[in-house]
Amino acid sequence: MNILVIDLTHGGVKIAVSLAKKGKSVYCFDIYNTIKNIEKRMLDIYGIELIQLDDLKKFNGDLKVIYPIHLPLSNDEIKQYNPDLNYTFITHHDAVAEILNDWGKDINKIEVTGVKGKTSCVFMLKDILIDDNPLILSSLGALIYEDKKEIILQKNISITPANTKECIDLAYRLANPICGGEIKNQIYNCAIFESSLGVSGIGDVGLLTNIVEDYPIAKNKSSASIAKKQVFKCDIVCCEKESLDKYYSAIKHEKINSFSLNDKSSNLYAENIDYSLDETTAIIIYKDIKTKSGEVISGEMEIKTFAPGSHHVLNVLGVVETALSLNIDTGRIINGLRNYKGIPGRTNKKIIENSTIIEEINPGINTKAIEASINMLDNDSTYIISIGGDYGITCEEIDEDSVADLIDDIDEEIILTGDVGKSISKKVNKKIRYISDYKSVYNLAIETDRNLLFIYRSDYKTLSKR
Image (tube, rainbow, N blue to C red):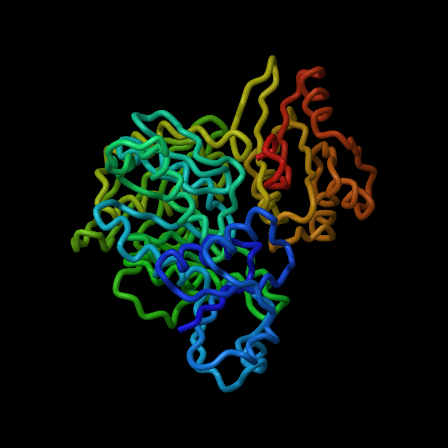
């Protein structure tokens, strides 16, 4: 069988090479014409030919097409180049699952997807599982922890499905340097992989944080909720109850655990939430949680962690349910959450001189996230609120008109910054201060002894803002 891997921008080269190493007959179609010279040489080394779809006319027999979930071409559009072939279509996610079929059977594996909160959930899980030397792929990089010390495998790496395999390969090369010697066992005893549009299905648990916005993908031919449905390929699924009911009520799966901030019919929810910019406390109630061991467990625990807003607590609920699904002891969960202090370059709190700085930095910042961040201040007039960001970051673009309407309706002092802030400033109906350089916003707060809520839609490539 011939294999055609489509899209070399989002990890196709890694998938193609992995299959060629297994002796498969592999071809590639670079739909976005972005392949780099070093990647082209890699394809040449493994005998992988770059083709155009029109070249399918020369093919006979069976063809497996491996495509990204957001591909703007339909299966029928691909078939029209040669209707006589016997086609099989699978996603990049499915291909990675096939490639990793024999990997990680002796460790806990977690895959995390959703519209918001993915990275925060990954690092909360890291703090809970830190004694297991977790291997991590997230939008902040490929990392491994050994004896609680962070080792950076690769910093600038995307969360495409192929990079799940790349993360594993990086960890192998760390344990087994090219200089030779005896092949070592893996360093890690668990793995946590973040993925933007669904998961591969290799997870013992798949965590779907939420579908707060069902944004379009594949040139409006599909949507986030359809792509993220792949999470139900995992053995156990932990899913926000509202998203489960709205988008996936027809899904048949033996082990679904739900969580919710508001719906007490879910498997896990919170009571007596006491929000604080320093440390939020809550009682978490769980019932009939289906676990990896086959047990069904119920109980409650009190947690304390950095979760200043309701959207942060929702992340906590998903993380706790995921850990319980893996039969993680409640003591480890409580201690891990207590140690979680946010993520530098994402959601965190810092003190600079006399100013408290709360950062909400995320490539997927949208109106609802901005509103939730502002609400957590509870009308504290000591805070300046800065809103801004960069363009061209994720599949979901920010609704500037909606953000402008939000700004018009609030009384707090707002400063707009960055390219996104500049554009929004032209759409608000009241006078708003604009400062182009976000660093100057920090300086202003510090020099005037004001606190700052810094909400910024960051570019993945700008590491200092991640």
